[in-house]
Amino acid sequence: MTFQTLNDVDLTNRTVLLRADLNVPVNEAKLVTDTTRIDRLKPSIDHLLKQKAKIVIISHFGRPKGQVNPEYSLSFLPKTLEKQWKVPVKFVTECIGDDAITEIENTPEGTVILLENLRFHAGEEGNDADFAEELSALGDIYVNDAFSTAHRAHASTAAITRYLPAVAGLLMASELSALTNALEAPKKPVVAIVGGAKISTKLSVLNNLIQKVDKLVLGGGMANTFLYAMGHPVGKSLCEKDMADEVKAIQKKAIAANCEIVLPIDRVAIREFTANAPSEIIGLDHIADDQECVDIGPETIKQIEALLEETKTVLWNGPMGVFEMNPFDNGTNKVAQAVARLTKKGQILSVAGGGDTVSALDNAGVIDDFSYISTAGGAFLEWIEGKTLPGVAALQEASKKAA
Ligand code: AMP
Image 1 (cartoon, helix red, strand yellow):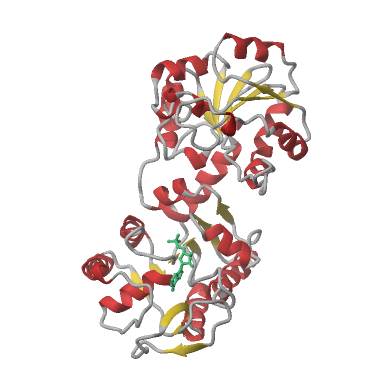
Image 2: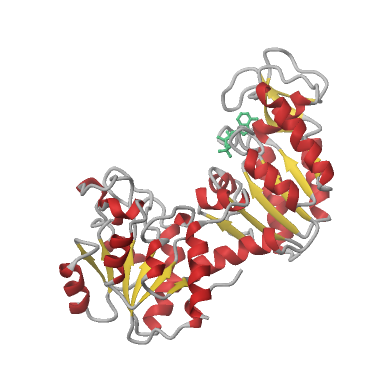
């Protein structure tokens, strides 16, 4: 994949339009409850400040649906940005137009400028050319550091690259290189670990991964659906019985692609769906009608741990069980800790992300021990589905134009 990054351009005294994802989680008092997204932008901010570039940040926040709505204003954010980035931040109440341009001109280099929510304008989500052109009037160069919005073709992620030279920010570049190393050009053998609730929401993920990885380890509710399709009883476990034909089709394709699907060999069953409910370790051949499986069993954990020892690359999405309910996070925790230990030893490259995966790995205490954990949610999932992300494609196009 070829695209230019911040490291490839001289930005001295240039005004840089930086597309960030500041759609951060907040509480009712509009206090930021998790600064991960802000902290991960710091390398780009520091790099640009060092280059004496003037930084103008554009972002969305929430879903104001093309209308000005104070509830979704980004005006609450500068104090948190200042604290995390250790740099003055000035808020500007518009994101296009003459007033915004004047405010930017009057702000000295060294102060970061944050513009109002892009989604106050319908042109943003409409990927509107005129809106993109208006945005482009605010800077000399466009830097996209918002991988998490790259699956959307919006004016600030796609159309804008027609009007300004475009490069990837350092966060975007590290996210793309982690994903490329895990899936496009990985060290083999590659294992994908996929869990979570249902296979119906991850059919494209499974169909893409079996073409690319050597082994696909399945856990969570979706393993119940596989086991059911293979004739094993599932009691009242979460199971999509109408997906049995899909399961068989995936298994057939996996054989053709030389990918081994690894399913649980034992499971943890409960009768009452609550934390600390009395549980039983059961095999695959029987389960009572009033029991449900909420985690992988100890033999399955051992099997996965052994398989990881023979692995060079791991890609992970989705928990192995109902990790929100103690102690049924055990399977997820043990597998996550094995991946973390081998990563720290330098034996494997590990990349994880999507949906609940980040909180499951946080709960397992390994958030800093994987090679890369993506906070990009939807964009991460679309990537592992094998889709082209419009924001990434736009950067690639721009770099071809520049060459
Ligand atoms: P997903 O968003 O598809 O990755 O699914 C995550 C959800 O799957 C979590 O809320 C887990 O509680 C749930 N989950 C994982 N394993 C099971 C299971 N065996 N039975 C029911 N839900 C599960």
